[in-house]
Structure formats: structure tokens, C-alpha cells
Image 1 (cartoon, one colour):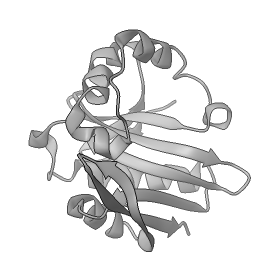
Image 2 (image 1 turned 60 degrees about the vertical axis):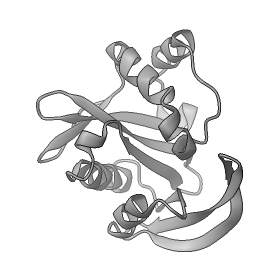
Image 3 (image 1 turned 45 degrees about the horizontal axis):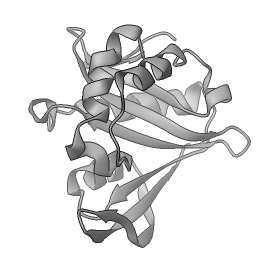
Image 4 (image 1 turned 45 degrees about the vertical axis):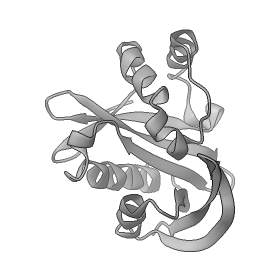
Length: 174
């Protein structure tokens, strides 16, 4: 895949050299709520995942791209999941690994780049995302990219001993 370039960041395919980066993210318990994860991942499993990362989105129904600064520093991930070619839709999620890289517009630019890619290269009609009711930053990010709240899933996720509501947001691409 060709890099998808923006003004301050670019998106690129996963590489074998991303093992430590992916391992750190997947095993960071502070982001498990976002990814709906409850168990750590081994280096072995992540290596197997990276070995198969070259497979086509039409085959594996997902696409994970690394968000990089123009200085080639990997700072986050942006994902398409539940890719449904027949109905021309996919789920989307974004994560910036370090707090120091958040609130700098990187997620905003990555989201714009991937939305454009979905529209112009994948021919998608709609994107959706699921965001915890208390994740104000992500809600603002996606709403600023024309995602609309279309539903509230009550008591959807059990986190740290209590249930949390989750919004379903959707964007029809035009």
C-alpha cells in the first residue's frame, strides 16, 4: 500500500518492525476500554498478526494503519473493521499512543485522510464508530468530522465494576 500523506502525518501499512509498538499498545491496560480488550497479547500472537497484515481488506475485513509523523515516528493506529463490501460500510477507530502526542491534531488529520481513502479508494457509503459516553474528546473528534450520534447503547460495556453507556455514531459519505 502506498503511504497516505497529509500535511503533518502520514498513514502507512504495518511492518514487521512495528512489533514492539503494537505490543505496547495492545498490552496498555489504560486503552483496553477503547479496544474492548480484557487480556494481554503475547509477542508471538502479535508477530503472527503482523505476518498476515499484508492480506487484503476484502479478505480479512479489516485494515490497520500506523499513524506516523513526517519524521517517521509511529505515534498511533487507525483502524477499519467490520468491512462490509456488499453494504459499503465499515467501523473506524483511532488511537494516539502517548498523551504527549494527543491534542495536537494528529487524530483529526488521520481521520480525515482515512475518510477520504474510504470514499475515493474503497467506495464506501458509510462509516460508523462506537464511543463511550464519557469519552468527550473522541465524541468531539468524530462529530467534527460529520459523524452523527444515531443511538445510545445503555449499560453496554462493563468497565472497572460498573456498566457504561456507549454511543453509536454514523457518517454517510458523500
